[in-house]
Amino acid sequence: MSGPGPGSVGRAVPRVGVLALQGDTREHLAALAEAGAESVPVRRPAELAAVDALVIPGGESTTMSHLLRVFELREPLRERLAAGMPAYGSCAGMILLAGEILDAGAAGRAAEPLGAIDITVRRNAFGRQVDSFEGDIDFAGLDSPMHAVFIRAPWVERVGDGVEVLARAAGHPVAVRQGNVIATAFHPEMTGDRRVHRLFVDLL
Ligand code: GLN
Image (cartoon, rainbow, N blue to C red; front, side):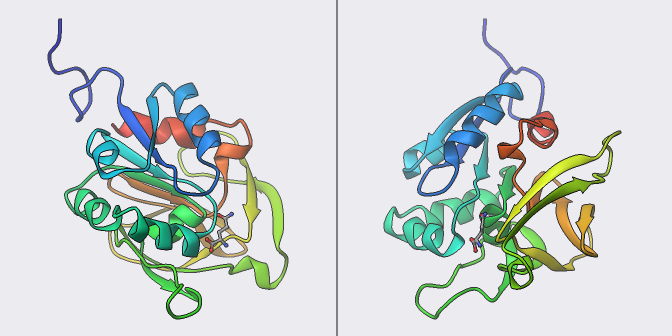
């Protein structure tokens, strides 16, 4: 028997896409499945059209921006996001979901913002001090700290009205949420802690 199930997507198990142009797609596919979603890779506009929500993985935002254009996904993705598709981005994914990117990269190869969440991010912000680091951080709504892995990570320099800061590191927001869009500067897909993915799937 079909019919509307729980959640806004009208499906009992939400179908969540993971952008699969570059980056740690497989880790997100596995994390989403463990968090209770059907997870599918997205490389083509038709695949994007078939998902209820999208994760943009960690990787390299300049390369992903380039490939979004090559695969003719950029405009359809912008349209879905503007229409309110739920989205979660980790690291490079946070950069792409942002409204504005500082240190976006060389002209012609720069990371281009998709404007899904009203934040300004600085690319490779921590990398000026140290390339990669990990640590336990407090995360709003969770009863114990989360182990967070940062790899050439961005931080958030400005949050707009309506953006909730969920976690900070070195004084900067590193996890944010605006409505059904979540972004983290770190990589929960790499640690086995599924609480961020569950938070996202539970929104759907
Ligand atoms: N520095 C990368 C970028 O600019 C992000 C790194 C990551 O996703 N681990 O896209």
